[in-house]
Length: 500
Image (cartoon, rainbow, N blue to C red; front, side, top):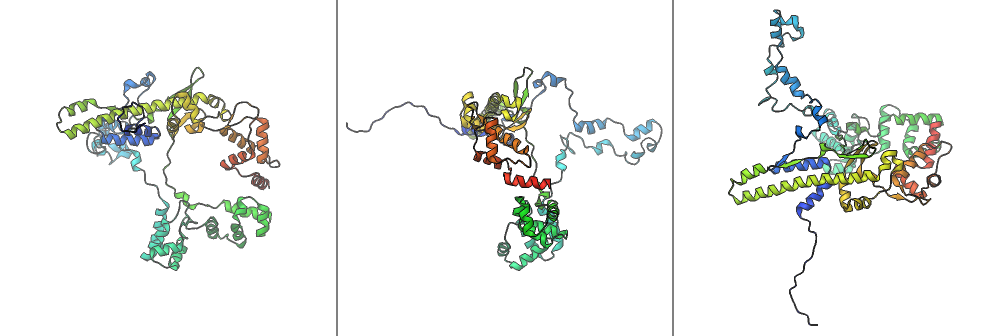
């Protein structure tokens, strides 16, 4: 057969990820705070997008009957304008102000209008000031130490070295850089850096600028005048303290049981991380995206949290009025692009909410036993299991459950918490969830007696005989270490020390 070039027309189907489709997929995995920031940015950029503020018509009958909350501004400012002043009340009684309101004498000559600026223009503006605006910023460890450095050192070179040492502290208050490296960076001698370090170690809190845990504890003991040779030997063997091998520790440092107990009690009173007192990182409360409640018929009702779902509207009236007056091609293109973006955003937000609700409903349906009886009845479930039931791709379910939380009668859980691997049943029955197995391991360890500490082999045998869970010893050890539970040897030493 001769080979020759030719033209063919073929028809085929393929999926093309447009930029808007890729953006819609990205919206699925955003948390409610990230989504709110994204919507705020679109509101600033796109003049056709408006927030959909829920009006009175959207309220339920129960919410309509509920009395409206009192606006703090109106309650304290606007209502105060209608009150008579102390002077006018005293004039009505034909007496002096001091006889009616003794505490107001000399204070009521100022009118209400001068005390509280008008709400319409000027003064406080259209809204009352937010109390968060008056909260002082958190005091950091660097700020606290910098003030002390300014009092300790008068030489500018020494202050520069001290502030560089402060910059090299971690959140615990430990020095993370070597003195030789700091001296090389600043062009100073090693003796100068070590001299400054020795002086700043006297700053508050005691223990900062230490380079190890033992050094941090020794600085605090030295401040208390409790750093004797035996305590120094104890600090040199903190590994034995961590493993609770008290008998070996006592022999190596030459201390009897009573002295060793007193020394360990002193260590417990120290702060191993002196810098954490100045940890000013904001604490963000977890807000659920979905609520799960028990319905009257005994089933579970799944609802979206409307407070964290931003709703937007497309201002078509504004688009029609502006597009009819503009003649510039670039402006028309800009308006068309804004309209398309606004329509896409409104549709994507609605689709995102429906997808979250659909996935959450399926999770609740499959984990009905967990909500009814607790973690011991948590079923093994994978992304593929949920995706096949709701006709979605596994990647979509993974994005939907990322950084999303579900408020249930049993607590607040991340959606990914319900996806656990399965452990086979030795009796041939239903598989067990890995999370429920971890919970059972913790229960067994918490209930063990000091004279009968359970080894990993024993726990595996108990799980196999009591609940039919086919689990290996190394799996028990892996789950135990993931829960930060020490080994049976260390637990035995801990409980012996507690009994002693």
